[in-house]
Image (cartoon, rainbow, N blue to C red; front, side, top):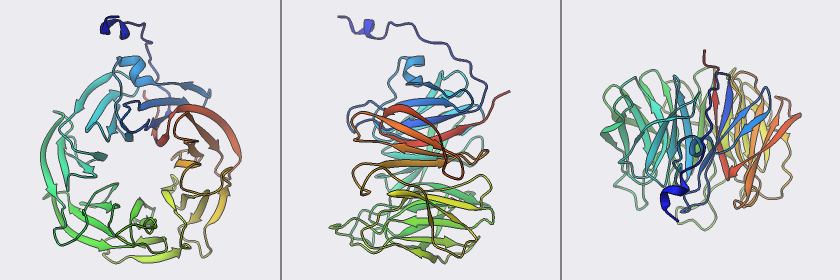
Length: 347
């Protein structure tokens, strides 16, 4: 069979102006079977593998995150070292950014500048979204450590400063001046800060998993911390028990309620005086191998979406709940659904 015949199929033509949710499916590491699912919350229709079906191009190896700016979607494909750019209404590919080592997230500073964090590069790439080129780098390496520091993950911006958490073998949140493209400060948190959100008071919340047992970096009880606007001091708000593994810190559109996975799905009011409460119970026991894998909250409806990777081999599931944890819908995705991206309606 000629290879070209594999790509010779009738491609669907999409034109979807309504709002919806993209699900990034990581796929299996080194298999190149990442995919993108699109879900219409109004009709509950599911569109499978929309990137490949539209463009006849595999998404690549490990779709880690997605961000929308204007009408374009940016899918960061971690192990493929690239970012695919596509029209969120038609799903047609518009280009790609290459020359990246192990990209994780993209954050836009302006029309012509964005940052891309990286797991292994020891730097944050500076890219021009308009030309789709890498234009520079922000060094972040910690040469004083015996460990491979600093990897960089999520990014949040307050005023001109961009905050990024260093998760792997680390306990820092770095502060970058977006005007000079330099690391200007760092904030010590607990071991392995895995996720962050910014609330309505411009307070930065950081969830730390405390490290994995047996890690040469050591372990400590996980914790939920907060950093006041413009502050460089972190305050521990809640401490978990040793052996727990909280992940996927998210916040609702109103910026007043936190959500995270710790086996079950928990929620916590940013002004609350009580401990986090269970909102959605997991059907699984334990937190490491199977079970809830991804989480996000619709910024408009405050509905909660939970991704279930099941066994990381078969196609995964997404469960949709009201803000109070009442089941609404369930749908299939690709392999290992891990992230969500909410698309507003396009006029």
